[in-house]
Picture 1 (cartoon, helix red, strand yellow):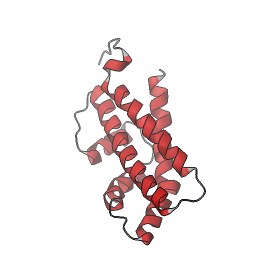
Picture 2 (cartoon, helix red, strand yellow):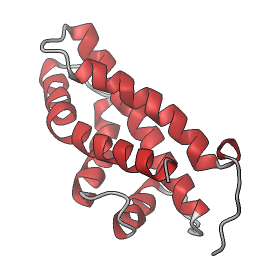
Picture 3 (tube, rainbow, N blue to C red):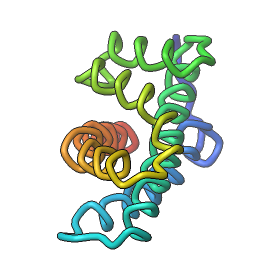
Length: 139
């Protein structure tokens, strides 16, 4: 595929990356906090949810730009792994599955589990994606 010289603002994945970048920076701030009250915990879970949503959608847009026609998050993540856009495919699939459960963090045990997963597992793969996409933009 021959890529034309298209301005950054005209490429959908680069536009969506801007929003993902902002969300990721918010997530970075809250993950860095030593302790969180129950409202900050709920905020972290929500920030993770929309950051994850933007992450898979920016991957979808980038893959579409590369010629793939994918719409479903699981397919997007599998292709992103095969295309070496993401490294730990199983963690991404786990995050996709758990993201739906996180919206039901009414009890303290589920909330604590979600916070632990976000801080110790999911933040790392989101950070890797952030850095990968940043490099892609700077090419």
